[in-house]
Structures are given as C-alpha cells and as structure tokens.
Length: 476
Image: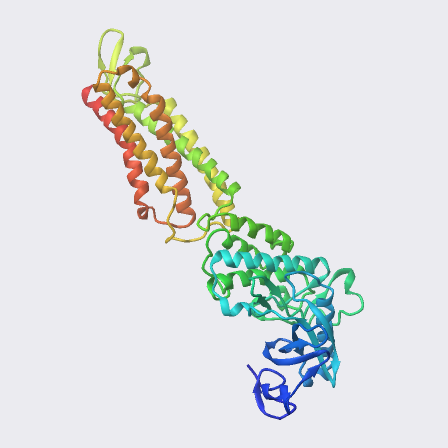
C-alpha cells in the first residue's frame, strides 16, 4: 500500500486521503455533504472509503472520497462521476446502492450503502458450494448491469463485499463503461486505455479492446477459481472439482467467442453444478454418451467371449461341416459325425471383429469430444466410483452360480433351467460397469491398478463361466 501525506496535518499515512486523527479535528466530527464521518473502512481503486452516519436519514452509510490530488485531474474526476452515475442507475440486491454524490471544498464524494460483513479476500479459500453460491450472485449482478449497458471491467475479490446475511454486494464500478445505446454522452474512457487488475483481466482487455460483457465473465472465472483454491489460476492450473472445472475453463477461454455469451448462461451452469455432487464431473448428457459407448464396448466384449467359448467348447459335428484349416485333430465318431475339441468359428469371429470395430470407432469420437470440451483432465488421485458396481454385479454373478449349484444338488432341477436367463444379463451388466469404469479411468488418467474393486468384481464374474468351461473341456 502506498504512503501519502495527510492534506490537513501533513502526517505520513498509509492508504487513505486523511489520517484517522483528522476525522475529529478539534473534537468536531467532520461533515461531508449530508454525512458525518466516523472512521476509515478501507481504500479502493478510486479513493478512500469511510464509515459515516447520514445526518438527515439517520442511517449508517459508506462514503468514498476522491483524494484531493486526483480531484484536480479531469480524467479522474470524470471517472469518479461515471462511477456515481453507473451505480445510481443500477438497482439490484447484489450491487452496492448509491444514495448521493457531489463535491465539497474541492473533494468529490460518493455516498453508498454500508456493508457490514467485510470483503471477500478475508474469507478465501471457500468450500466449493459456497464459492458457487456467491459466484451465482455475482452473475446475477453482472447480468443486470450488462442488460443496462454497464460493463464492470474490474471484478476481483476486493470488489466483492459480503453483508452480515451472507449476500454478495458488487462494488467499485469506478472503471465501468456504458456500452450500447446508453453509452452516448459520457463514455470518456478511450478504447485503448487499459484499466483494471491484470491477473483478472481478459486477454483482449489487456490489449485495449472495447468493453464487452464477456470480459467480466472472464474475470468471474478467475474469481471462482480464486475463491475455491485461494489463488488465481496461472498457466496449466490444477483442475477444480466437479463441473466447476469445465465452467472455469470455458469462462477463461482466450477466445471471447468460446466463453459464455452472457452472465445468465454462466449462472445456469453454476446452478446445475450446485445440484450435482462435486465428485460427478460429467453432465447428464455427457454421462449418456459415455454409457452408450460403454454399452458398445460391453457388447463387443460379450461377443468376443462367446466367440471364444464357441471355439473351444467340444462339439460333435456333421461331417459336412468339416472345413480345411478350420479345425484340426477332429476324430470320427461314426459315418456321419466327427468330434472336435476346438475350431475356428468363422461367423462368431467376424461378429466379434465387427462389434470391436464399431466400439473402437465410437470411443475415438468420444475421446475427440472430451478433448474439445476439456473433459480429458489428468486426475490420477481421483477414485472411479463406478468400480464398486463392477464388484456388486460380479459378486451377484458368483452368488447366483452358488445358488444354482445348491438348487441343482437339492433336486429342484427345473429351477436350474432358468439360471442362464438371469446370469447372461447379469454378466452383461458386469461388462457394462467394467467399461464405464475403464473409460472414466482413461479420461482422468487414473491407473487401473489403483482400482482393486474393479478387478475383484471382474474376477468374481468370470469365475463361474470359467469353471464351467474348464469342467466341460475336461469331461469331453
């Protein structure tokens, strides 16, 4: 913070235009316009802020004073008046209300709503849920301001106040500029003048581009990341939990056309993220596409397994079905039949290859979409929750087989006849959850060796059919 000289007592003071001692000169409270100042609150980009009491209204207010040395400069004076006008025309519960503004003894003042909860930086980092709630309120404020032609251009933690009830108040529109139809008459800031806080500014704003609401949305993306992590995003920053990562990365796109088109659109995504578990990083439609690809992978795997089973299961075949190179070592049973331990099942093999080609193509399209949408992010320490369903369905397969064996030995053979109608779909479910887990693991670069539930469940599911196949081959 810079050190200045108090214009009254000439004392060296940090920040504000007046030292606290001069607020009560000779025991007399200092009066600014209709407000009796009580004490300093802080310092913003456009001047010092004091707590005061409105004499006529009898309410506590905040007073921003433009430093005397700046009041003499026309550009700063115009910016100060612009802040007052911009705020005065905005009436929203998430925007600091302006009650009055004026000049006194060469000093400009702005009388505003007093917020008793403090500023945002003192509360960061925040739990993701709280950060989402307050970001939604910031978007509400910006959506209202943008619809009235005002771009804030300096969204940052210091300009976000929180009242005692936990409500967000956006303040310091000192560098705001009217855009659109309302811009006529007092848009004094030239397009090539760069104003704002660099680490919160969109790239085009740093280059002096004309104000655009999407600049504010870039700043909200930085703000949201800062609220959750306690630091602004720099370079290849670590991902946030859940959908917050996608929201932030879209807001921070260097290309304005790829950002949110409006604060309302960003607000809707934040609302959606608030309703979903933070561990769930995919939106419903994304999960549907992943499930569809996983189903294709499961079908392909099931066909391959069945093709292998058909190929190694001993069979007695008509001699007319014997083909060169398709089977070797067949034994003659009688004049019209031969016995084969294993053979090349051409049609089942072709079916397996065809479904595999379809599945791998679908996966290629899915992965391409993940890259474009920013969903392919390395998070090797994040567990894949779907692995537990592989364990559950795999355990169910083994339990069903155990029940079948018990029923068969108890003499209730007719029940056993219905077992394949249940075990087949159950094994398919195992394969489906297996591929959902594998696809999610590949998406977040999670090593599969760190998913023991997946392997245990898959082993339990394969145990019954493997045992039956081995038993059939040994008894043949």
